[in-house]
Image 1: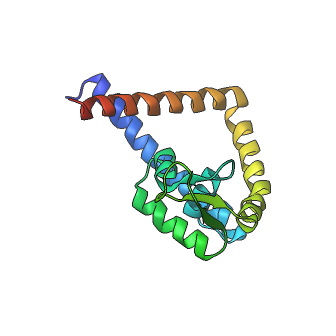
Image 2: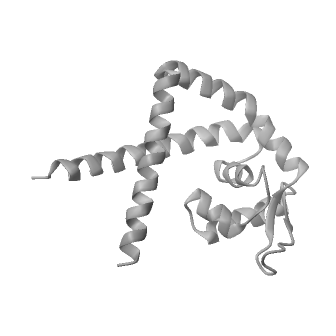
Image 3: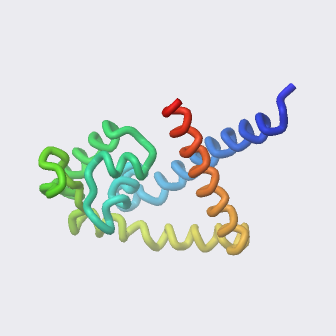
Length: 152
């Protein structure tokens, strides 16, 4: 019989997997009218504030550098992003959003805002804030423990 911590961990994982699938499906639905995929939107979103190297985008997204590289190359080929020199590292170029990429992300804004408003109404803004903080705390704890395990 599972102990309570094991059951909580399993339930958290299964719920997170389901929520991830729901978020990805929703992101695909929101991004499609702007001519983007969820993955393209995610990479562009990572560089809206400032250009980042592929490895930095991958770390922020929690995915492999290779998958971000593939998407970045597609975005550059479509004129939605561009590579720029990286003063900190000659070989690791920075990925930057172009005006067309920014415009595509902005086209998602109204539907994104509308869904976010409906979600906050459904769950309650205060409760949604607590949930987001709890998810961030859980993610940080898993990362910390995983890092500790790597150093054993």
